[in-house]
Image (cartoon, rainbow, N blue to C red; front, top):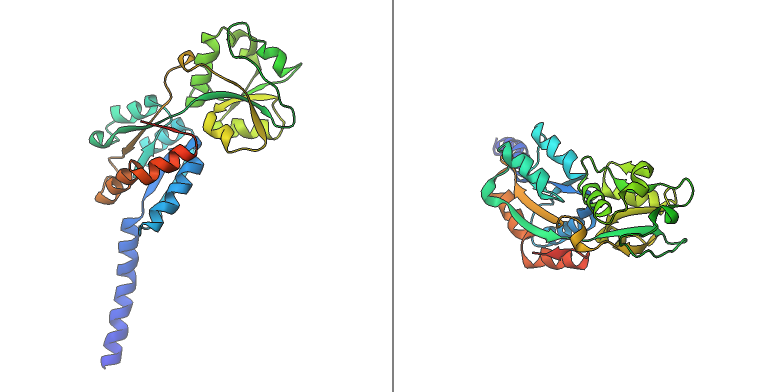
Length: 254
């Protein structure tokens, strides 16, 4: 009889333990450019004794719209303030948790086996760098933050008209990087941190910081995913261990 009671208690405990584990699951929706850094930080989070958090990487615009449609995210990390503001306007982030954590820079990259340099200034021959029929890989300026910054920089430098009809518009910045890595585009505009993780591209030029809006990464807990655990994770992402990981990947910390 005692054995049967023990077995019954164990059977009850298993689903209870699973429920507790599920309650502690955390999901971070993050800009594609944060992929490598957040994987590094995820390992540090687990090493500190926490349950692994899940990640979903895409363009900030895509992720913001998914959150708006009810996707289960606990934290949102955007590559610009626009899409965080968009969610804030819909009361979908916990406003008291919002903080600007990172910065970045914008660069022009070319395939590593076809290195080139171009001084990114008014009068630069960007079209000549692309060659006949070549296209410039860039996150779609209509909604991808990296593409928006790129369009701002190209217009500020007077280079937009050279390439406006020659853009290979991609769904996020990592897709733009991939086109250049594969040699499918002779050049692309990505973040400095994206260029740093790839041995298949080389930096041909850096855009002046004043040629585009400051590149800012705001982080916040979502209202639908707000919990003590989510806030603890955000505190970790703001802390010294995460900051060191971000800096190692080339991000600027606020």
